[in-house]
Length: 98
Image 1 (cartoon, one colour):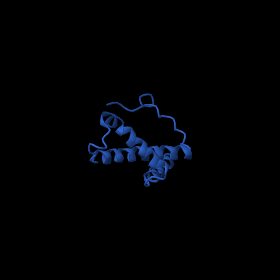
Image 2 (tube, one colour; image 1 turned 180 degrees about the vertical axis):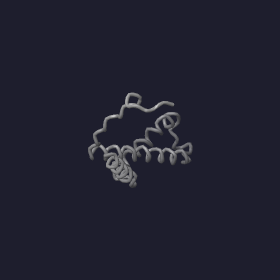
Image 3 (tube, helix red, strand yellow; image 1 turned 135 degrees about the vertical axis):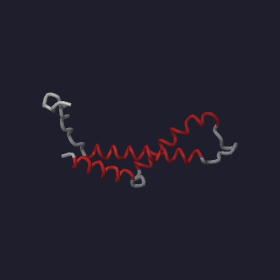
Image 4 (tube, one colour; image 1 turned 90 degrees about the horizontal axis):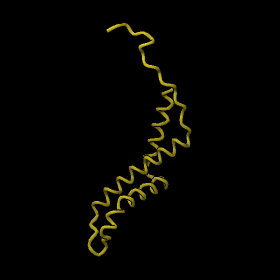
């Protein structure tokens, strides 16, 4: 192995501009919405629907969309604290890269 010279070293990537606080908040809320949607989907899979209230193949097709929408709305309504934790970590990571 030879000596390392500046010409053989890979270029250092330029610094990325820090994200704006509103973008961080939006991203954290979207993440919480996805998480809550997945939790809701798992819960819906365990519900005994019975024949009287079963929506057939249409229900099966849109059950995932329903879970996703419920998760997004829960996050918009304040969620369960996931977005705050994610936001705090994103800010810490951003401050650490300065």
